[in-house]
View 1: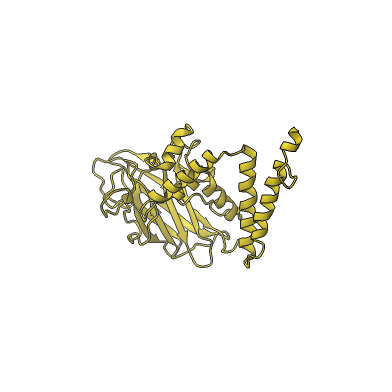
View 2: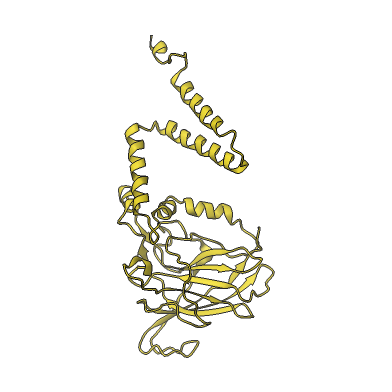
Length: 301
């Protein structure tokens, strides 16, 4: 009787019913004209149904998951991207970057984009200041952009952005202030230099559904200290990356899994009164300096 009860009206076991549904759903996408879309949807269905079956997901749990994703959508706007935060804390952003930016010779490694990039950041000259009134310790950043053959890359567009010492990006304020971000171009010899702020640790926004997820799982929202870069040049692969501060205790527990050893740099502390590379008078302020040489891979590799 128990065996009979475990069969449906068609004489199928529960496992067979579940497998038939997967086959039916996958078959529904068989006529998709775009081969890549068909591949993606088949994989999504296979893995999603596999998860549901593996953990024996309940209807209540599924409804709660839908509610969570709905909350993520509601808090997302043109200044805050909660879906990127969710992707980041699940390691999905970092894994996509790993897959999409395969190592090529000595090209600089990529890492997560983050939710705080803004188009049309101010243009600064070589040696200019991205701080724009943001609070924090001044930091001199310099380096050279080269290709993987060692040739300098002149005119590379270098976007840089960062939080202030309070751990806030300009877009996290309610007004239209702009600070901690700019773009500049490499010189004819590939060199670049600018003033910014010494990076400090900060939490990702944790006042929304992603923050509640981290709290429920006992995870910290803290990010290791870092400075964002996006570097573009014709014929070369766009690089999105950070540099991290050597010695930061959060390097091994970055909340979005973005740290790579090759991106950890020394930010040498300079006492107040130490002459600056460009003769800037910082008065009685201490400052730091770092070097980040960038190597761009060819486009399409």
